[in-house]
Length: 274
Length: 274
Image (cartoon, rainbow over all chains, first blue to last red; front, side):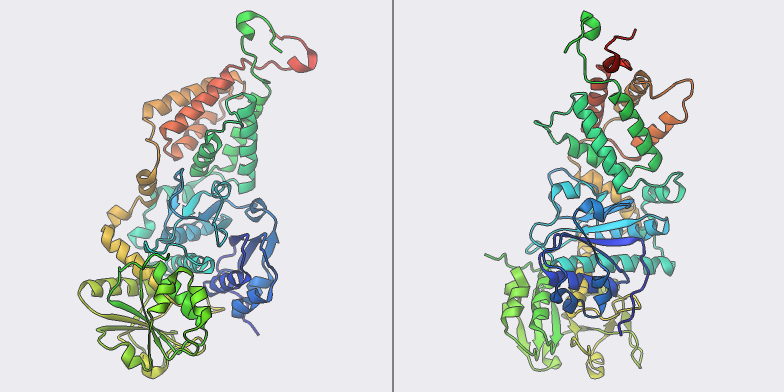
């Protein structure tokens, strides 16, 4: 009988998007369980369930069996307050980056502070799409040699789960070296904050509201987007909005919505444009 | 054409003993090349060469092709001055142990000092035999969760090669002091960012513009401020706004300003309030 998985990381879900090879799902599940992680979410897997996934999982069949299958990334990260996405380094618009070690430390610290966390892995062939990466607070880049930078999907899961367990063991054993204590800004956010972080779905609704409002006031032209929304997403994801801030921003947008569409020249000419 | 492998670790050989599944050989080769290692030695592999090994190697076929096949561990580690063997923790006779991170640092330091190094991985089923472990200077144990401690062979290769590359990068960039490591997130943001950070006066003008607009749309009542502006200042100051972001936000506010004051009921009643 298989030993049921540890429950070291109940707030951490591993999200695999549109995985092509079921063997990678099984190998990822094994890598997770080896490192004490259990919550696997699959977004539109190509072949699943599949015998290969169970075979490659070896004694992590329970992780595969309890995997949650959903249709969209939004469903996969619903309720998450920290969203991390694996990515190659060279994106056009730079995003806040974490190396794997810092990723492990951040996941452990934020779970301790009560956050719900997702780590997202993209397709074997093409990784994460830009719109998926833009839902992330941080991008994680696994350093590689120059000659061959494309890790197998399950290997990438292994490396990050390894770093999560490493950070957890370090925290447990109180061998918190200066490096681990270092990120002062993050620490302040975690320890002292007066509001819970907003969930990814609340932030997504804010973005939609913002986009509608930008169109309404004719600042944003969907025909000529100029990376406007990408830059705003990046900006707000850097901030990591709390619940109160989301409420404030939505209240402001609602007040703007009440003004209606631009009525240029209204005051100057005393006429009502159509 | 495949890019030939880096030559970051010319003195380090990865030794796999009596590997049963050729897929693991290929996956191990890929993991090695991803991390800049190239020298693979196979002791009595069960099925090799084999198509599965080449397929799983993906773009690390060169590492598989140049693998050296030998009959004994002694041949595999001939000429080595540092021999490291992966092992579960509970051996009868305790041996000097290294954790993966310390293993990476040791390999890098000893290569720099001119040593020839082998890292040995045992059989999928039973790992290394006692007489093999006794040829090692150190045993390496990869920490795991308690429920499932047996890593896939290629995953173990991935974790140790990852730590070797990490240690090498840290040594190269001389970022090993806590002082320099400290503001990790911010520093990375600064280094990679595509826009200059906004000046404090530009941000202050943005705050003033924001406040005026909040009053204009009647979301903010200066008589009853409710910490609104404090929260917005704190929110934007959590990140360092760049110039483009300030321009976008001011452009949006200007578009809102053009809407004029709230004109409630305008559309519903068809009248112009004063």
